[in-house]
Length: 473
Image (cartoon, rainbow, N blue to C red):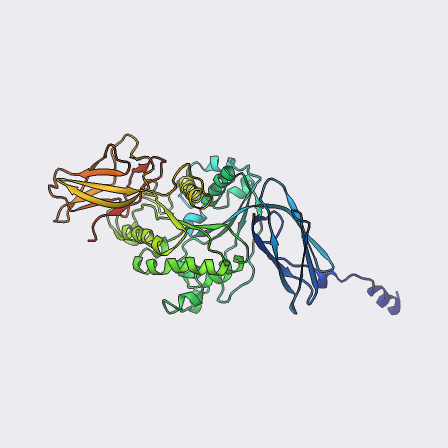
């Protein structure tokens, strides 16, 4: 072939690479978009070009113009979700299709290892009923996007990951709390559910907050030796930059969060910085979404040099509860009955997910058939050698389901605590009487106020009561 003919033929070779629409990882096949709202669709196209977006649930054509670097975005209106599967086409002259889209409820799952824990469990720390969890996989209306672990000193714009369908293989590797939460929401609301998993085991809360926000409270120092997978999850801002910020353009309904074990040594600091994380995330998502989180479960914390009978983490749980006052549109669930003295990763994740889902159904979705808020200490009075403790959110009454209430202690002025007896006060929905015959003049009552303690007090809906103390010793 002569050179002249070769160059003529080159003129007819299509140059697709220049025109290729590129989408962020979250905007892809199998995704779930938040229903009944306006969502952002964004990506990269040819520079300074017309971009059109067509969606299967709407006849309108959304138009925009890419900037000098090829970036573009449009706001797309969504409708109520059902079992209909949709497609989306995006074009800048060359067309790209996104397939198998559902409309429904999208929730972000954040935190550390107890949120991350899948049916595989961790080394010598299995999940309850792991096989049953894996076999209960057939939920075609649930999709999951796991954000791959990443860290960076600079703000990133995309993550690595893809929307996954539910199979035995995928269920084995995703958040058990998130998947069970999604199952309950899906069944109760009869709409698809998308879960975005953004977590890293052992991560400190500072790693999930922007540098700008952290600087208001503390010096942000990132040392070169922290820039590796060993320290990244404990280094300020690194996970926010690489994992949280890039997903914040995607519209979500709310967030469930399970974190704190990495911060237990400084509860007073956590009380200050935890509400700031929520504000930071809401600002970044431009969405005052509901935020529901898990109180740390009972554990001996011998790995910290503490003991089951210590109160170091009891104080941290108290701080988690106090933080609700500084976090509007939030709620916390208790775990006093499902801890494990021998492992920081309690194996019962289904109960955690159920309580989070019930909280969401009550507070976010307006289901009034039950109250998903946990019973919480309200006030107390002393009558002789008994202390009468009143609770918020008792439902139709408190119960220990026919066995003695465990986890209670009582003390006199000497501050020596004894295991306490208790009974539900008849005729009153939210009150128990607490006593020990050794304490003639009681001064304080505590419930599960230890690093590890088992409690079995519930309201009429089976929601576990939160730990408390009436003293401030």
